[in-house]
Image 1: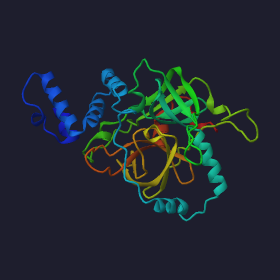
Image 2: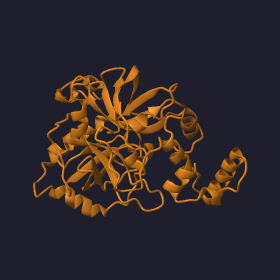
Image 3: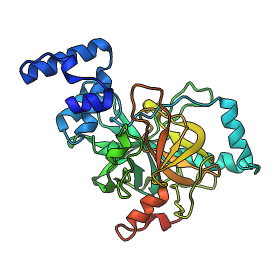
Image 4: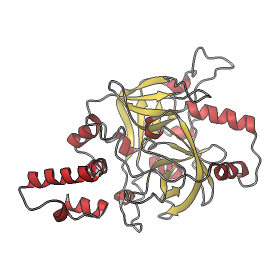
Length: 340
């Protein structure tokens, strides 16, 4: 507790609690923190410190401290909308075929889902996206916090209408019984306040979820036909990369809301490209979102941001898709080679 308070919040344990039996000290700290208005942040930090603790996970879920799993802070100030749109339109001085762009974006919307945990109502737990007919990718830190007795589902087409008023219920697909296909954890460096800490190459913060049926082979609604093709999934080209100042787009369910699109740019290659830092607007609930380039190709996995809770966040962060695929080589059926 003392180390967490010092590293995460720059607060002194002794200043928060006078000497007493340990349970009394902890209670006094909670009372003081609650009075100062940062109990939610303390609860999230405690869960990040011991993410495998089921009691903390259930406290987060059932206690209403947050509607999504704890994650590195992932909210940054957006750039002016006109500037973001100008960057998107410019796309390195290439013109965009509007019809093709719109059609491609619409397809990607149907391949992005909200990760949920069963409940009344269901609890939003993060974002994910199809990378195969029945395979969803998200973050490891999203799924590792789900209590073992809860059912995981993926909700596709959770959208608002053009007026932004009516919300579609979407298509809910439960996970398969043995749903965790493969994963790698995040790295302690991802939540470190020391910017010189570099993540280990194999700590990629991804997870693959097997669904109970191949929703990617099914039409988005009604009967399959020329005007209602299969939903499909996001193809992966491991050769694609990105560099600073490249345009990025992120489809996401921020705070569990209906699907949104964030636009920004890649700002920094952190750790020699082990992480991409970017300025796309995100929120809690955006963890596990697909990161797209200006041509709407899947190139990364958004997973968090600036861990410092006591300043305006300076960056958000993604894992390059090429590094995830490289780690999966020879460990799994190569789903990335299969054309949607």
